[in-house]
Image (cartoon, rainbow, N blue to C red; front, side):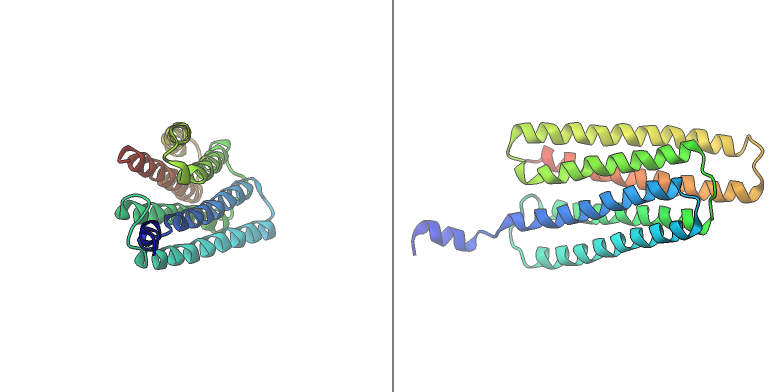
Length: 217
């Protein structure tokens, strides 16, 4: 056996993690688009169908995470620090869970009209998911300076969207308690704006983690 073959035998195929991240990102992107549709939908049967589609994405994401854990446990070396490889997958799964939470709130609270602020928050989550998808597609090329710069730009896009949703969250809470909503509507709308805020924070945590990973390379 040659020296090169000897080393190749012991070096794991590190790229096998990237397709799993890409699967997670694809489920997230699809679910975020479905969530935006839910915020615009008024037909209850259609709402239920959209909610089930989001749940299917969440279930698919869970299966990918299980596959990710199995792969990680059987791999000695990883493309970047082992704890970061694991945490990134977990953070992406958390984001998917938060989107699923949003879909459940929209359906169970039976919103037949949703304020523009809430719709815009859902759109921001969708745009952030698109940016995340683009980031994940570039992860295998972190050695390329131009790709790293593009990832940083996309992370900044996510941060900007998260900041906009933070502002909308604060102003919406103020509006709930200063306008003439009845108690039931206040509770329902507070539940929804909170899960939208939680989902936005989740994708920001992912972009922060990716920036941290890049800074260590």
